[in-house]
Amino acid sequence: YVAASETAIIKAGWGTIAECMVGHTPPVLIERKSVYEDTVTINKLVAEKLAISITEAELKSIDIDKILNRLEKEINYKELNKIESELEKIVEIIIKEV
Image 1: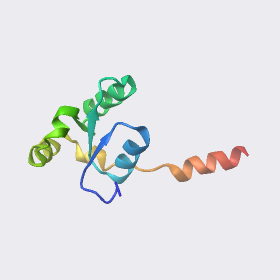
Image 2: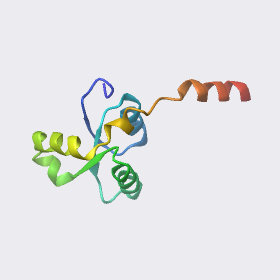
Image 3: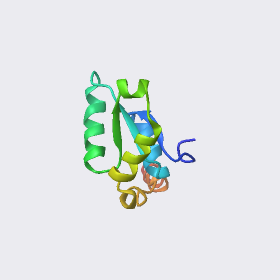
Image 4: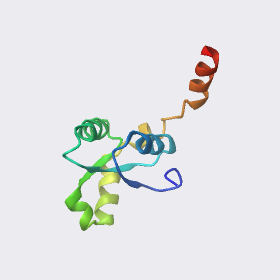
């Protein structure tokens, strides 16, 4: 469903982020300050202009127009659209090793 979406509001789990990246779906990542791993991931993706973040408080009264505006201004769609899945390459490596 992520790849078919215009955007995805998600927690910063690696699997869901990977789906967004490969599907060229800009992620809106929910900041959960209590999860260090999420904070590191969010900071990296925001710095690379591949995601934006919102707080849990913002999620409670979400303004979709504001989110879409931010995505338009803060996401580098050219770079996001370059990301490709390397699943076939990974499978080849695994099969070769077996």
